[in-house]
Length: 195
Image (spheres, rainbow, N blue to C red):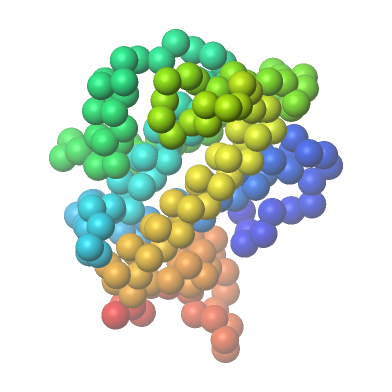
């Protein structure tokens, strides 16, 4: 996937393409990292690149559950899962985290493909303090836009963490991940090219 979303035929294709693009750039933040580096928390926050990818998959999956109106777990269990979702466990690898993210992406695409109207209402869960109490429903369209926003936010977080790990930045990483040729003004990332 190149640095920009290709032309799209319609709204549904566009929303899914932009969501996939943001997933892609989030994954690029992990390009070339070791397992240890993927777990590293080099800033004042407790976030790691691997943890952010894991969390973003968890969050997207949760939003699809909301869209499908699946019953939620008790809040205490949900919050425990939410907090664990930010951390790559010792027995998890980047490959595991990527595989889970791919599974979530497929699920999202399958669910959205089965919805005829993106304006279909999605009831707002009640009793959750961070959801508006004065809104009865969002639309499927709103959920997709929110997923794009959330994924983009975490892709930015991952870029900052990655730069703290080894100095690598987004465009040289994308060039390396996608096999762009070196030019006089852009050198793809390599382990020896960073700080």
